Image (cartoon, rainbow, N blue to C red; front, side):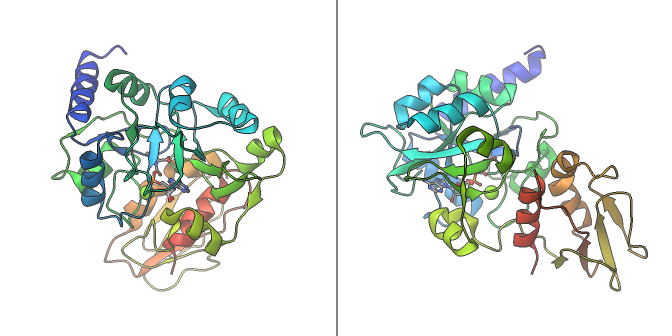
Length: 313
Ligand code: TXA
Ligand code: MG
């Protein structure tokens, strides 16, 4: 890490985390609101700041597989996934070890923990310096659009947290893919930054749960998550009066009061990186709503469509 200011900020962030305070930091997916995962009162403040129901368990971030192994039990298959995709936008749900130091509150008292190694130098440095696992949900109020820049975080949480480490825009822009590896068969709990197809190439078929089952198994998957303030409509074929357009690809639907294009080239990775920022840009009370053009249900398109469906009414 070359920039001395950034380096100092990461040091300060590590100290704050160790003293039970909260820090927002960048990851390759979205900005996280981090606290010491072993400190129940830090975890309680995360829930408080997010305004999140406390039955919703958090993702635990670690800097290495060795450290992950101290917290949870890996099967052969989950080890293979970890080795192939970590650091990266994959969260594995695995059984807690008996002596796991992570606060029960962070895992909502479940027998399992959701865990990942983020692929972002700032996040990794912070984790190495803090020397504690960091619990981090997305750094936004519960039920609103996830932050992909430090400014997004500032706008929603400025008064509630001690420090925001600015690492620029997040490379991927949607949250990690969550796979439950604690049961007999791998099972997708949340589509995200690593496409399902890539994971299946490593471990074969991954069960995809229906929406109701997803919510039961990953309580954070409540429907009105990721919501915009104004109505959002997916698979739009035309523009209604006063609507803004969230476009995808070379075509446009015309007559919108404002337009953002997720990717003119029709590139789903670019679209994911732009998604939450553009949802915010178009989320203005003077528009009647946001019309979103159809996005193909492949690769990162699954995660994009999942977030858009949740934000739509
Ligand atoms: O990309 C990400 O994953 C971001 C960055 C900051 O790493 N984090 C994130 O965390 O999205 P959060 O707290 O917003 O989402 C956590 C999700 C929720 O849907 C929750 O229900 C699920 O993980 N989860 C956590 N622990 C679980 C467990 N033991 N079993 C099943 N689902 C779990
Ligand atoms: Mg979130």
